[in-house]
Image 1 (cartoon, rainbow, N blue to C red):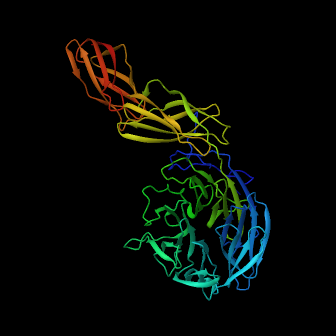
Image 2: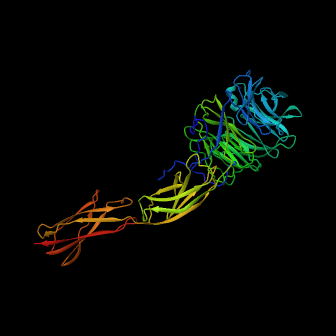
Image 3: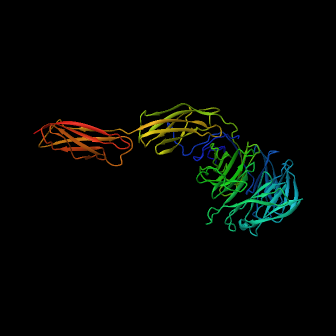
Length: 581
């Protein structure tokens, strides 16, 4: 089950790698393992009446969601298209004569095209009536469809055996003037299509035995024939780094292409030449494998779906601008109420960005769920107040230091505590101290152990989340001193020239442990003058003993000292003994 709540809602967390900035319309503290985003997103979940999945289409005009069951395991299988409204209520279930795979919405939203085994049909988005469009070459593996440039394009993979579909020869076909035509483009594997703005269409090739270095390419669909534009394969000269394609999408303005690559993560590319964008997205959480991507219709946000286990997020919703590091909203899908992972090509947004539709599946891949996610549409202000304080007043290298402050936030109380991020900058550079929880009253404590003498500047940041804007950073500079040391001596009142003098002592050093046992200098001063005696090494428990045979009668003062080091102060102690014969 979803580990956030038993009702299947999200489990918000934030990636440690992310920073921050925009809104989504869309210790006393403890250090968190990763920073967290806190937002009251709504996640409605419906169990889909399908045992396999092929496509998702969203009609924004009539607020309809169409989910297709591929059911290609046997040539005589019928197909299923489940239809829901934006609230998750099932409106109807459409049965097709043969297995149904790809779906594509017409430009005006009046019909959804469906790819069947030997034909293309359309479904009216209001009456759900089916209409024959054209016959097509037999597809045994499952088609993909895209509507672009006023025409319907679809793939036709063919393999005699279902087990060989991954390496099937696949053609890209079209419906021209109501008839099936071949575009002339073909390659190996179950090629995937994705329409975009400005009469552009993407084609992606899954990794397979007949395509060791798969491609992504852009087509111009404005004319009567497909014109290939930018294309890219990703393996290097040694064959490393090949694309493991799972999904792709155009940004709404057509300037960027995002690819879900199971081998790499989320690739952000420039659409004109498919080169890497100057700034990419942070890595997915460790253990998550990219499976799906989708831009919101307004271009502000991106959803990144993944396959992950345990508490690792399966879905991140974050600003589409990779330089905007607002903390993502994360979802963990785990179990019979949610599914376990986002399916490849399993996400679409509503045009206004108010809803994300995501299909998940279980580990076996034979059960499916539709999630209707409504990220929060409002962000509230947050600010640090009152400055930062620290204790103890005199910071010491190698000893705990607490930096305290207060974060105020507008709007309703967050569903989970907010987090602040802290760094320390000293002569050795800037050090990430992690994230710290904000209490209900807004107070927080940053815990640190400075390890360098001198000025240390602490910077505390609130990076924002999906309901709060970032706060302006707050800083304080702390003077870190050397740790104190002390020497305590226990000496007899009297000694003698014949039996000598024995003095015991204890050496104590605070702060960071000494790299080696301290060696103490011992001096004796008597009426004949001063001289240095043999040094003594402090035992593991801090104790030491000074033994001496005095050279003359009268008072003898013994001074024991340690010179200090880079992190510890010097210390000294003296004891006077009266020496008799």
